[in-house]
Image 1 (cartoon, one colour):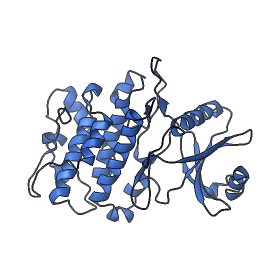
Image 2 (image 1 turned 90 degrees about the vertical axis):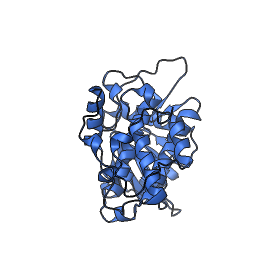
Image 3 (image 1 turned 90 degrees about the horizontal axis):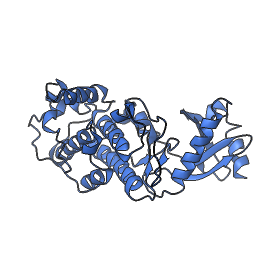
Image 4 (image 1 turned 120 degrees about the vertical axis):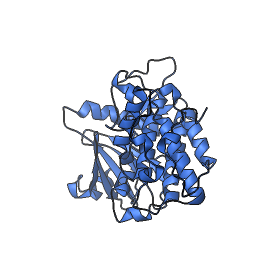
Length: 313
């Protein structure tokens, strides 16, 4: 009955109900006969990519049926038939974090407290997946488009089509997965799935939330200065104020100190050497403890002062 209700609600997946398109399929908004609104991810069904879509379906089901966390999207059910294969999730009217960051009207209400809360939510979800799930789950595609926000700006990690459930005593080598600009540098020469790959992606997303845009130039500059074993990068001398999103008022007091700590934390997550990155459990605990750096609003703190690989040691 639910299957037929979804087919009816989307008029056989008509394009006018489509609210997003991804690598494995398209997402539709469906209002059921009960009045409840759900998100339906319909997997691609063309013959050349059907096998990949089926594997993505299996990965997503395997990852989500074993997870129960407030910051992870809820999977209500799934269907795999000769006609259609799709998954049914809770629906978030606010869309993705990327949508909010790119919306000039909505960004003005996305203040620093809300941004810290979003970062905290993602950190808590990843910490749960890495350290509380048995076996651990690696997302492998943490990016701003895969983080959904509710009306309270609470973060919900979504899209587990590339997720990897780590099997003890078995090889965890796999094919490449992820979004360009968010993937860890070690994936260029190794395809072994590890938690620290998610840690790196989390660092990129965190800076994106703080800066209001993808931190591509900053990340590249940090990688270049690291490989040169020096801090001669021009961006490393940027004042913190230059990095923060200018579309919202500059943070002051305790909020400024907390934002500065989060930037420091994000930079540690972006360490080119994965063994020097913190675990998501360490990151989650640090944010939950409201860790901050004591600085005055007038102090011109530089990014290079926040690059500290011993931040979580």
